[in-house]
Each structure stands twice: as C-alpha cells, then as structure tokens.
Image (cartoon, rainbow, N blue to C red):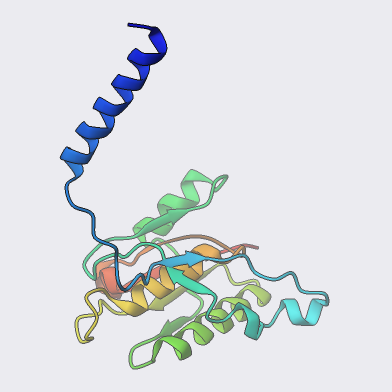
Length: 179
C-alpha cells in the first residue's frame, strides 16, 4: 500500500471515528451570542467622548455566564498589585451605576455614557450593578452578559471583577478605568 493511500485511509478512519464520537449535529435555530465588534474611529475629539449611535447594538452574544458566576477580567500589562486590590475590593469607588429595571437597549446606553463620563473625569474605580438576572425570562442574565461584553470592548476599561458580597457579589462589578 502506498503512503498516500495509507494517509487517505487514516483520514477516512479518523473522520469516521470523529463522526461517531460527536453524534448527530443539529443547527442552532436562535444564535444570540455576543461578539464584540470594533468601534468606529471618531474623527473629532468631541465625538470620542460621547458614544455614537453606530456603537450601539453592534454586539452579538459570544458567551454566556450564569447569574451566580464570578467574573474576573484584566487586560495585559496591568500591575498585579492593582489587579489584586480590585479583586479584594480594596478600592475607592467614585460612583455606582444601577441597571436594575432597565431594558437592554437603555442599559447599553447607560453603561457607555457612565464609562465615558468617569473616564473623562479621570476616575479610576467605578461600580456597575447589573443584577444576577433571577427575575427575567431569559435562560441567562441579560444585563450581566451585556455589561461584561460592553466593558471588554471598551479600550478605557482596564479590568473588572465581581464585587464583594457586601457590594452585590456576582450581581455587580468593580471596574478599573484607564488614567
């Protein structure tokens, strides 16, 4: 048997083994994953401080987290001491945004405005209360997932983590903003 034919047989055997191990595949009917899209570059300094309409609703769900799931996100290059202080809640929070009662569209605008405002004011630490999503109809906490994905897409957000239990626990995030 030639080497090419052997490779071909092995490929077919591997393919068959893979198909058997995976089983039946069904297409997902409702694909609502969050994928952060790149922000459009603003041409003027004033528009850079205000979220544009084009930034809104450009998010698709990529991953879902549960309401009780703890979150920790740190961009590369962040000082380890600063990251530990954030995670321990050993920070001074300048302001807090509570998203309870907001629909997704309004929450998105509120988060973007809140982050832009506090970054412009040179505030380092803020808190966002998104809730655990226990009262909604969705299988996953909509506002929690929206908040995580929006913050991840913001260049002026350096890190965020679930808050201490006394500040809302997994229903809130401490956020570290760029100087």
